[in-house]
Length: 435
Image (cartoon, rainbow, N blue to C red; front, side, top):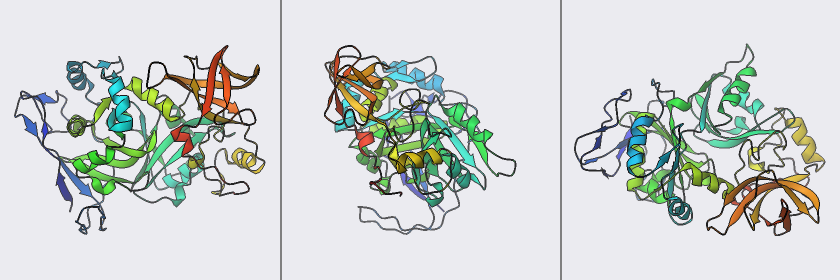
């Protein structure tokens, strides 16, 4: 059995409506029908009592097991139809189908602080790891302690080289029959190939890249909770980071989780492409502001979330990237563990990733100096919330500078070292601790 909740009716232009009668349709989303629709979400949970700030505390009956599997479709976000719809609203879409801007970048960035934005991250990689040995396999191949997690929980984990050099920071959901990994667009193929390389003949593990069979939206901003309440999903508000539950939109799978790839706050929605358009429109009707990829990259830098090919490269190790929340120091042997343990034991971390408030635009790769001596390197740059603001990320030697200190970037750009939200959430172990 399943508990069903109905989303508020979503108003769209009078001459259009969504036809979701088949998840396999290859035709356009838009057909001329009535001026409004409603979407029904079915909640699949085991027999547990759901706590809520509202008066209801109903115990749900046992439900059939539900787990996300690649849906039987061979297309992505039905991009042709979506692009047609977005073009009407003045957006710009790249050749590979990524929405670069909705022509509202300032409004979207303001909503991150004062409202809520919704971002289509369907170009990010999604890897499904299944099989009887999947937990032990990921436990050994990345930095997080997967063996302590249970179905419905999630975590961040880092894929590293044998010498603990960074490859990518991934967000993982532990499902009933699989683990879902969200990775960066530029690393999805290489991580998929790497994981397959480390499967031994006796391992019961399967790796599937399901990026093209799924869509991914994220909600960011202080009003994300209100959007969840408006979707009748308020029971997820206040749950721990990584908590996720399965739903369906008119019979099509949707998984909603707490947090997203840029923050432990907000929410993520993983769904079948056939449901993507209707869910997106409903979220907009609840007050969310759409955000394109250009301003998303700016937000990434302002938040301090490291990215592959920039902060996460073979030049820097995972501790220098300050990704402590993604690392288990006592789970035993795993790839990169020997190097990580030695760095922690002997306090061998020589540099750290910081935010840098700049006096002018700066080129990534520029040296960071103090009194003419090189102490680090700029890895990312973005303009700030105002035209006169400039911001960057960079690695700086630990003994050279810290929060509030002044540095020079490039030839003559003044920078102030500052803490950034994503890295400020990280919790290094206390001196002498191994946990």
